[in-house]
Length: 121
Image (tube, rainbow, N blue to C red):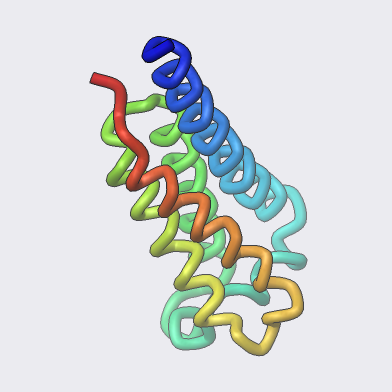
């Protein structure tokens, strides 16, 4: 019976890792394909200093790296905390778009659940 509990924990963390990785991968790929639809989510304080096109590309690469990190299963706690912080930053800097970004709050909690989940020993 103990084995089944461990298997369920491993499965739930795998599902959380894959789910978060899909979210970050989709956003990154979509922003490469249709940058005009995504550039508006970048904070003005940054786009005033750096070209929005360059900033969006850099952020997209960051998202792909984060997705790959989640999928690797290495130091998952740190990757998931970085995911939560990234999503929180998106929500806070786009508060005027809360009707869209409110979904990120659920993703923040999914990332935090992954961060506190027991890692396999």
